[in-house]
Every structure is written in C-alpha cells, then in structure tokens.
Length: 89
Image (cartoon, rainbow, N blue to C red; front, side, top):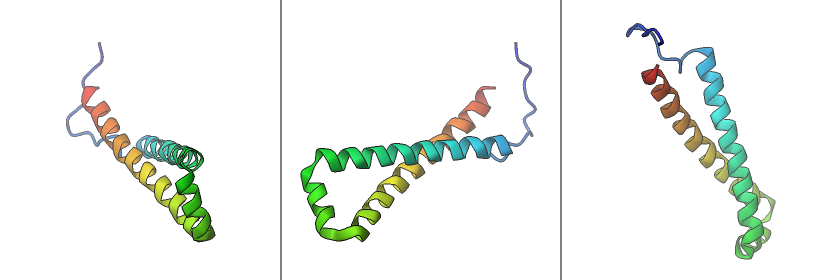
C-alpha cells in the first residue's frame, strides 16, 4: 500500500517532470496533427487542389494550423491526465 502524500504538496505539473510530460503530450499531438493533415491531403483531392491553387503560403498556414490545433488539444488533455494522476496517488 502506498503512503499518502501531504495535501499541501505542489502538483507535479509545475515540477521539471511535469513540464517534460506536458512537452511530450504536445509533441505527440503535433505529430498526430501532421499525420492527419497528410492523410487529409492525400485522401481528399479537393483539399489538395485548394492548396495547389493557394500556393506555398496557403499550404504552410494550413499545415501549421492543423498541427497547432492538435498540439494544443493534446497539451490540454495532458494537463488533465497529469492532474488526475496526482489525485489518484
């Protein structure tokens, strides 16, 4: 059986380990967003055609928007997971 932690201990989200966990979640989200964007471009010819007509800047904005959306979502989910992990232990 594990010993209970003291209630006035700071959450591990602020610790170096928590920051590394949060960065890991963000990187996984960015990788997933990049894979989703590639799959969307390859599977949907209309998206590929729009990006082709928009030029390089449009493609860069599209990919950056998708990657950042997934990274932010994964980071927020990671915060919930890390804080929930602290409550369980």
